[in-house]
Length: 254
Image (cartoon, rainbow, N blue to C red; front, side, top):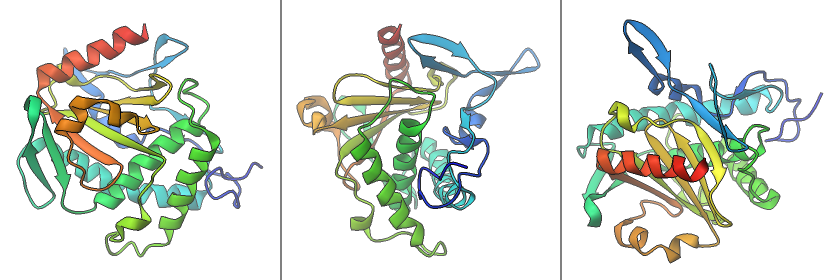
């Protein structure tokens, strides 16, 4: 049996490992004419295909690594559900910036949230499904080692040492609409947008990964961004702007 791609020690015995975490499934279903429908698509070789399940892959991880990543997912799923309240609370603070775009700064569990999205980026890169989203092997290994180092924490308390979760191989920005209106749902896909920019689209959230300090060349992002921790930025934009944002990305892919 193949070895786990994350720890590289244990057998990759886990079946149906979710490349895209299953809690995103809650945002792709809707009731239409009394029937449950699914709104999900992914792009492969510039072709949009429908699928009836989130992206899974067999024998990618061992059971132990699967369990460790599940912890990051559980905490982060709660954060993602709360950020659509659009009001500052104990979990996060909202600050306004230029262009009517808000910065969301997490007040707790920001390190776990960061580790969760790094694990998502890693899983997509090493999976067999998203052919145009493939990071350099050295970057994949850096993320893998960072994740493994943080598996050792006591799960009864927050990860509090920011230096241990900083990843300096790239920066990434999470964009979300202010609400979860149907027009902003989007689909699920991951691709390389340019030599230095990678994109992950999820229901109601888009992730832009910037390699080689590409973000430094984007003036608008520099003006609106306030980093809560190095490498991670979370921005909220009006629904109509986010809808146009999604449409433009789809046009570029077709």
